[in-house]
Length: 239
Image (cartoon, rainbow, N blue to C red; front, side):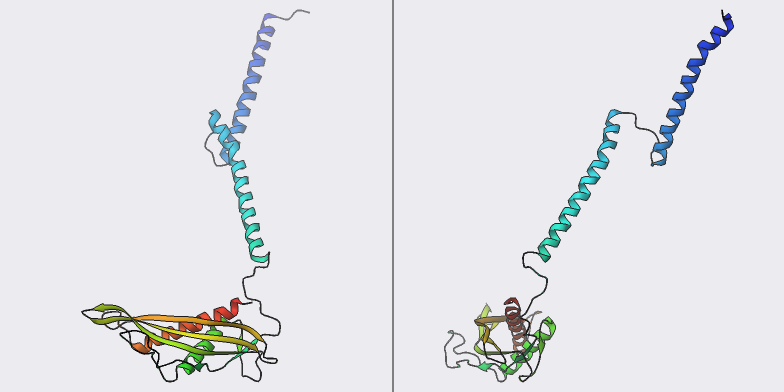
């Protein structure tokens, strides 16, 4: 059966028309997909296509690195015996601070400028108050009376120096005050020595003139606070 000339011409045009419609629909779908993802047009170059393939991979690697870092941090904080707070023995929860013994030898020569050790009345009482305040601030132990405490802190002040640091026209314009003591921490029930250390030092400097001028009494209080901080830190770090 022969087809007419007009039928053959029509069929020849049907295929390109169908292909053209399919291609147009495909392009519209691609453009709609990229527009919905925030793009204005589909990538045209090979570089853009490769870049789009690399973005999910790099994002995944970055998230993996973050997860690994967090796991490592958790292991450092909780593993291998490390902790963010001090762990005391189970029976040591309260502490009593005795008034330290003042063992300063006021006849001992210390320098050519200041011949002898400095002596200050009630220095041991003031130091005891600073240590008690530091224990309250630290929070690991509670201060208690001797009959109810689990441990007793005793000590002695061995040095109290006032050393010149700076001169101006032969006048001293800056001093350093230094306090040195020995401490012993004992169990209240059996007097077992839990911790002891000698020559723990606290100090502070002060100027006698100028904008940074400070009185010796204020500098001494700063030195006692520094010494109290060091004493409590030594006790806490021991466990």
